[in-house]
Amino acid sequence: MDVNDAIHDQLRKAGVTLAATLPDDWVAPLIGRIDKDPEIRHVPVAREAEAIAICSGAFFGGVRAAAVMGATGLLTCTGELATLNLRHQIPVFIVASRRGSIDDHRIYQEVQGRRTLAVLDAYDFPYHVVERAEDLDCIPDAYETCRLQKRPFVLFLARKLVKGRAP
Image (cartoon, rainbow, N blue to C red):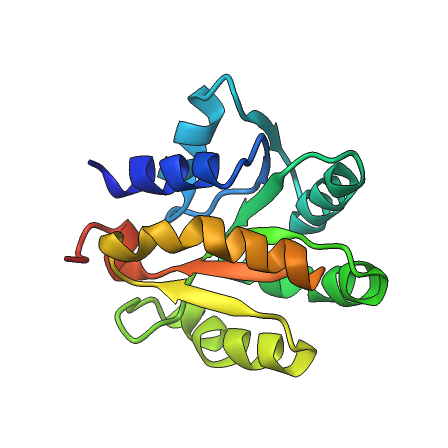
């Protein structure tokens, strides 16, 4: 099974019925799967903060939602995550590419690699990095952790996973 199909299947197992997305090249194939799924309402956005707002509102309507974005976009919306979601205990589940890792080899992504996890640690946001396809079954548990802790949770997809180099 293709890794993006597997991620999509695990999001479905978590009960996700709405996804707000803004692609980078690593998560674009996953977004394509989501877009074709009639059971998941797909809401493309122009800014990552819009995805956070949509998923936050969905929570109040009892809808299980996920925001899908790149690491750079995640960094741009940490203010919203802190002032809206953390302060008001609104869970939002985020699937993001883990850009800037040592195997990324894109110099313009290097800052994200050095700073993203440190920023999340500073806010005390839980996160998990998935590097192997056989570990994708953690997604439903990660989703439940997000809801139980009532805070943002970031599930990072490593390069070797999404670019087809993971075992």
